[in-house]
Length: 389
Length: 135
Ligand SMILES: [Zn+2]
Image 1 (spheres, rainbow over the protein chains, first blue to last red):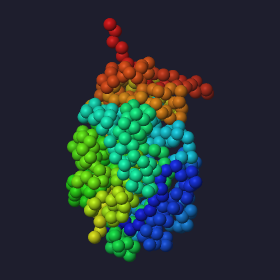
Image 2 (cartoon, each protein chain N blue to C red):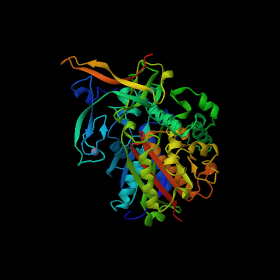
Image 3 (cartoon, helix red, strand yellow):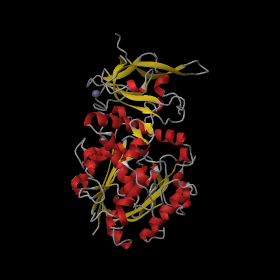
Image 4 (cartoon, rainbow over the protein chains, first blue to last red):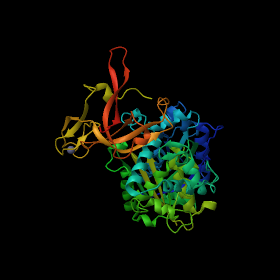
């Protein structure tokens, strides 16, 4: 990077079915919280990047960049919408970091927002399926759960991953979410409940799937050399990486791995000069139970095919000696407003590295990683952060 | 639910399965590609007819359908490995979910999706069905 970048403010709404809050309400609430956190009035912000997957289909509104600048009272600063399906948020954070690193701007806000619960389940399912290949996947009735179900089936076939293994990330994430006041599902579930929940797309069941959610999140970035003007605990961006892969799952050489995760992680570890085992806390993209198993393998936290047993041994719990994975509750239990999720991951890591994560605090966390996936892996964004002191 | 995919609208013979082969590296692609991802500008694509035979690489049974598929659910979807090498996604029809497994042999079949009122073009969708071995 041309110059080092730090995060100096974070904010997010509660995630969930927020009937009483509009799209604008959500974004403004998260943005104001981030400004308050950074001790800013709003005048400091020079540009905004907003992750949003599908306001056009969810709330019948496009051109949301202008809407957001307008409702936030921040016109005439430039505001840009970023779309990469469920990776829209992570990508918005990356655009903000690049804009500051390049020297173009000093203080930039990256946000993400999605209002998903105004449409029916069938409409939401069809909208999420637009992140797949419309011509070669969705046309044949393939849903998002079905794509990840096909990954799961193959992972079980090749590595002996079991139905019980699949249940372990959701069980852990629900337990973590009981400690997160902003999570959608603040209750525990058992392996038996996951395995007995209704089938969605075999072998995946309802409790393997992240929910449909409303929510927004925001972070403020600036040059590291300016960061102390706004905070005593700047969080340094050590790496920002992104990779792409085929839109359709069937075009991959190996569908039990997301090559874009492997590539983005490799670039991120190289930029940060660290190894996977140096990461203390990670927020990974667990849109489905199998997605978290595949993610911890592709990020190098365990060998390929060994994630099921690692979960069985409790390797990724908040209090384990290993990396803590999804202390926030993850997409599964914190909620998954698709455009906001990638930003909310960064919010969690910043709070963890500041030591402000309350009951879900990972002891002594110094290096954190975020992993945000679009679609079935067509886009992946990986960031690495470190405490600034 | 969008319209009929571009490819199916433009395919000449709707009962043929046409992919592309890169003359430079020999890789066969289905769905057909204009650019070989391995050879990029060095590649040269030629149309190649595929047999439509293959086996199930992975599959799922959709129980919660998207808009437009409500009446079909539950239905089987799969990634099929064609015998020429490429993998493709499609619905598996004429089967009970219980008889499907990884490795199950299947063959392509075409289903009429819709007919264009004005010019009478008939649209087809690619599906697969299990190959039942006689005796
Ligand atoms: Zn080639």
